[in-house]
Amino acid sequence: MFPYELFLNAVVAGVLLGGFYAAVALGLSITFGQLDIVNIAHPAFVICGSYTAYILNEHFGMDPILIGIIFMPVFFAVGVIVYRIYYASFEKTGQESLSGLAFFFGLMFIIEVVLILVYGVDYRLVSATYIGQTIDIGFLNIPLRMAVPFVVAATLSLSVYFYLSKTFMGRAILAVSQDRLALQLMGADPVKIKQFAMGIAIATASVAGSLLIIIGPVEPSVGRLYIGRVFAIVVLGGMGSISGTLIAAVMIGIVESLVATFYGPSWAPAVGFIILLLTLAFRPQGLFGRQ
Image 1 (cartoon, rainbow, N blue to C red):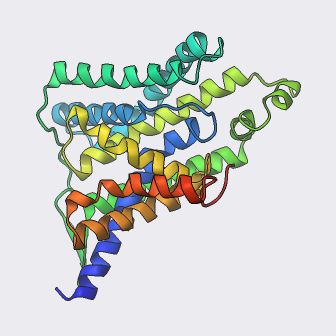
Image 2 (cartoon, rainbow, N blue to C red):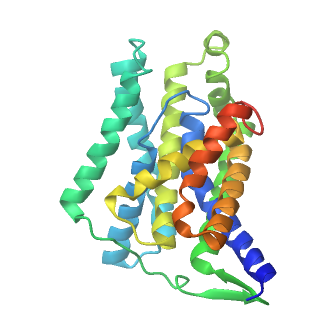
């Protein structure tokens, strides 16, 4: 393969990978970017989505993406419960900064340990008709296990974007981090709005988890690999900017793919952390600023 062909294939692979990253980072863009809640456990909820897809695919042969969509209301309810605990224990008493972070850190490890105790540390995967198939367009090779998640992730990101920007509840979620007092004067309850937002954020993890297990096998600790990436994406795109999250995710996906192709895959995981540090140093408001 000629160098330019290798380069273009790497770029295409990076775009597809970036779409998946956007789905993983979408929930964190809401909790961290708009609610100022450092939910470091978000990738663990994504892994829960992966194992939900694995269980039902293994026993009933259901499509992983369909499973992720069907279980969004269940994950939404989990998000509401998690926020109620977080609010009563930390936010209500003004201890959310450090104690709240420890709460989500502990929650992440609890989820990981429970999954290890139940399913072990073996890698799990799913089966679907499109996994393993490739579309060849000239010298471009597009694996459907990457293309299908990209389409679903882009659709999910756009759906959340239009919901937040066009509906009353969506605008209330955007307003709760900007001017809580003004929101209260309008008769809205910031606590109920934030718990609804947390529900949406965790619900997106259901779909992201189903996409993750389509792209490759998972085991309980895989979520740790995405902590640096998703925070880098949210900060780079602009705190709370859904469109910025999608663009930043694609950018990081392309850079990672190019680094992995020309310098080796072992260097790729460091890209997210490097971009995060550079963004904080030179443009802390991100590409699109805080929403």
